[in-house]
Length: 94
Image 1 (cartoon, one colour):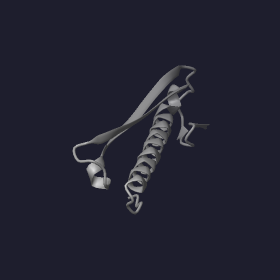
Image 2: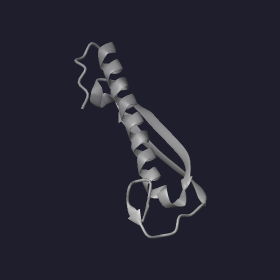
Image 3: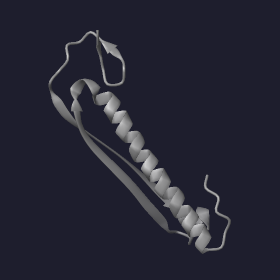
Image 4: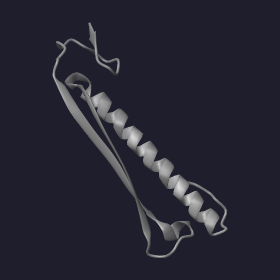
């Protein structure tokens, strides 16, 4: 039995073919919702690229997408805390 990188068993023959997987995530933060100036926004973006065997592309794709989301969410949370602190507001991150 052959197992993919994510632990899923498969009967397919392993492929030596390597592919490149790219994933990204972006988020637009409305500053007025967090004590900032009206009609202003901040944009956040993260991107990842990784080479892997074709058989494990789905797993790698999901993993690097989750890394992008986590990085963007951490940056958004930090920006909200910084903005609210600067304006003297209680720093609550959703």
